[in-house]
Every structure is written in C-alpha cells, then in structure tokens.
Length: 143
Image 1 (cartoon, one colour):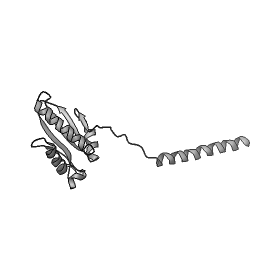
Image 2: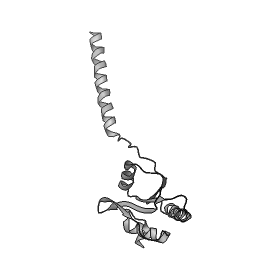
Image 3: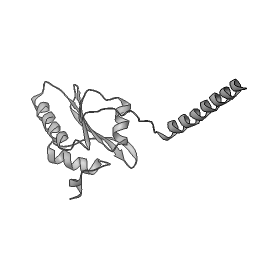
Image 4: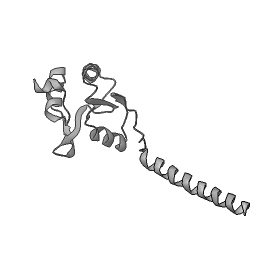
C-alpha cells in the first residue's frame, strides 16, 4: 500500500512539473538571432542581410567602385563620412568592381526598390537622396 502511494505521488509530481515546465516555455519568448551588420560593409551582402536591414527601416547605399581610380577613392571617402554621420539610418555597402555606380536600396510604397543615383556624390546630395528615399528618415529631413 505504501509503495502504491509513493508511486502515485511520484507520477503526480512528474505531471505537475510537466505542466509548469510547459507553461514557462510558452511564456518566455524566443530570442531571434539578429545579424550584426556594420554600417560600412565591404563586399557583397547576402539576400537575408538586405531583407533584415530593409525590414528594420535602414536604407542601403551600394557603391561599386574601381580601387585603382583616385576619383573613386575620393567618392568612397565622401560616402564613408556620410555613412558615419547617419549610421542609424544607412548602411554603406562597398563593392570592388570594374564599373563605378551608386545604387540606393530602400523601401518605396511597401516594396524593396533599387534606384540608381544620378549626380555628383557629395554629402549634401546624398542627404537629399536619403531624405527622399528612406523609409525611416533622420529628424533633419523634417526641418
């Protein structure tokens, strides 16, 4: 009789701890892994990184450049200075290439868009583009 009682208590405790454990697992949310993406990124970005950045309101300035051209190095420095100033809103993606071009990847009307930048690469022009194209804008855009 004593063995049956101990067995019943043991099974009851297992069931009780099972219910408590299930409740705790259900209440505690999973911590999703978020990629650490620097605000100046060298090389091609993965599609999942681009999607992550766009979903979090960031705008990607994708700069293709020829490392042997002095003009491209000057533009690259201008872009890096700009990216450092607005690092909470922009990721500069630098890609070594045979061609030189600047693309702006952002969300327009709920869709991801790639827009070719036309014009001289200056901080003022880049800031104007950011204010026009960014889904999440810095407060200076509203002044």
